Length: 216
Image (cartoon, rainbow, N blue to C red):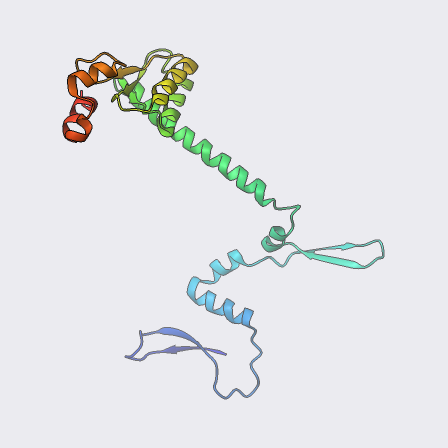
């Protein structure tokens, strides 16, 4: 095979093409592996190819029978050897590293918010992400010293388990959340809310319902 450089108006100037002679004097001896390596060299450069190529280093040992046993040390060989590369352990370690990174980033963001802005308040709707934030605030001591507060909005249309879960969180982490609800109605007084605003307000006027139950 040969490297040919074409300079034709029909093609991009100085484009490089890998071509074979149509009538070679001798049968071409290039292997598919060598061909792929040559193409990759053009596309990515020799340095990139060498970075992925297995090394030629080998280790020769002798068996009890005196027969030579040669093993080539390469990235592929290591990947194939279960004793050297444990994929499950690698995945588990990667997950642990990722979680540690996310935790550190979250705690850093919370630290900036609490220590640089007064009256830091974090909403908690008892969903996973909000509970994680509450957990981190506790770990950092912000709930205990009152540097941060947790607020909860009771729309009087929550599942009963929601407020029960809030009480569990409060007891577990040792803090008291500030619960907000519709104006003029005591916290937890669903009957009072129905009498004042109507039990079906969310069906009749959703915008008014949002304003009454979710906007202070």
